Amino acid sequence: PDFSARGKLYITAISCLGSDVTPLDEIPDDTACAEVINAIHQKAFGFPILSIREGGASTRLLYQAMVKSKLFQESPEPMEGSVIISPTGLGNGNLPNGHIGIVSKDRNVMSNNSFNGKFEENYTIASWKERYQRWGGFPVIYFNRI
Image (tube, rainbow, N blue to C red; front, side):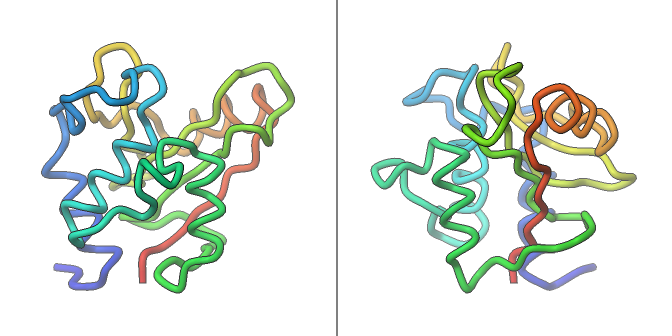
């Protein structure tokens, strides 16, 4: 097993598959992806990447927090447990919001399902890039928890 921080985030994310990670719905399910990743980080490490009060429901603010954090390092390639993010506000306007998830095995991505609020393996890296990079004009950035 991978005992790194990235590995711990991965194992925690896997344990959340199929569940509503944020059942109180402080943020509506259709825009709760950043809140969900924060909640998984909280479950793994005891604190969120960025609290909801500080803007942790925003992919843009979460991205800025990871760039500044000594706990995250940008990665040129996705690995199991990498955070994948396409921050809101950096697209071409075709899609209103960006998205954030955690990379699983076989280049799949686990993220919040906007329709039912469940944490699911619902993208591949290729389908993420098709939707967010090619169609939405967003950057696709990977971060590893260190």
